[in-house]
Image: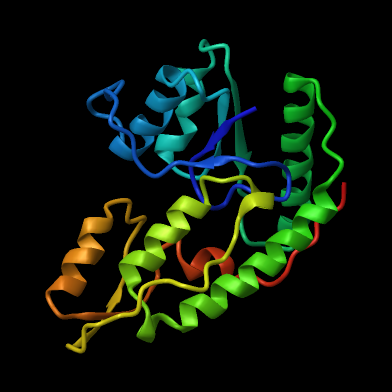
Length: 217
């Protein structure tokens, strides 16, 4: 199975997904959120995609099910609980429902969740160390590596040790924003002589900064 996931909130402990960054297909509805529209356009139009999973976190994602329910492809929305005393139990129930939905639709059994959790925790520690080395490596190369890595199965994700060194020595900057699928932006910043020392992008260290997790089967 090949599932497309809309955000970094989707738990990798359950199964592999292909992360969505951008799509060049046609928008399905002109007044819809462009990012979300591209997401379900790819699910509908890409024959290599078997379905999708997304958090039910905003008006755009809440409406997705109505567009995808007639496609015949798998689609699951994870409900995000409000921050209160029952949030952990609620989220655990949602993840169990997500797992059960995958098993029922694809007629498989997911029994390696604990092992996947260990792989994720080890990977996250290595990514955090790589992020801390940003002053000496190319940020564009770092971000490009992350995007490529997140498109591969968890067991095939390898942390590089030979990213290009940073040659710029100009003023330092810090990036804030949503996902950055266009690497030429980072390349242009470095080409202008600026040093990118860090970011708050959801596909960067922020994705790997959570405390270690362990989900049982």
